[in-house]
Length: 219
Image (tube, rainbow, N blue to C red; front, side, top):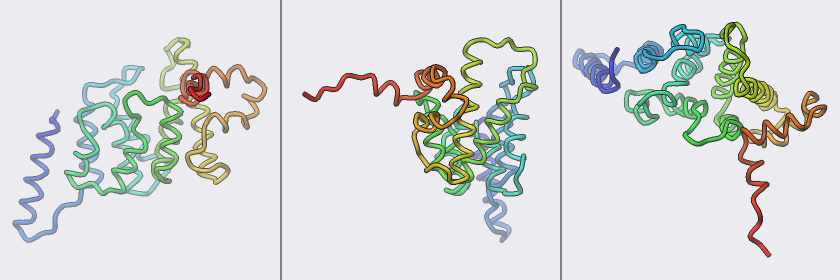
């Protein structure tokens, strides 16, 4: 629809025009977030074939009246899945608070999933709540009713399940922000009964298990 540069230029022109009329600089808000998300994710589809934009809209609008959470939710996949960067969001006027939230829900290149979730937990309640909504929507079986349970999808669902309850526990104050998922998983009854599943999840999604297997260079 519109490229990043087109949006940034048009928004800059709009702000300048308002200031020239004696008005305040327009606030980067939900409308701008929706324009950025719909344009940057225009070509993407959900696994079921629907336009992808419905996912960030659901994540942003569900269970909150907070404008900040709504904006973070709408933008939560933009940096990860398009050419928009966190600095670009600052450039168009989104607050450091919102950009910090977007950073917290953005998985970085090469970052393992549980490492990402641990980092999300230290970015504040807005990032935590947004990721909880994202995980809940991603895990909803009705989104992909026709997709076979391939092995990678089965393990991804387990990772979503563990991450969801981990973030809920952080939100409730039951565990500290940034606590290792590898420690949290030991407290979950389902995985206490099936430690082999917990071990496989950590092997696939946590760097802590890989670090533990590296031989020590100390003598």
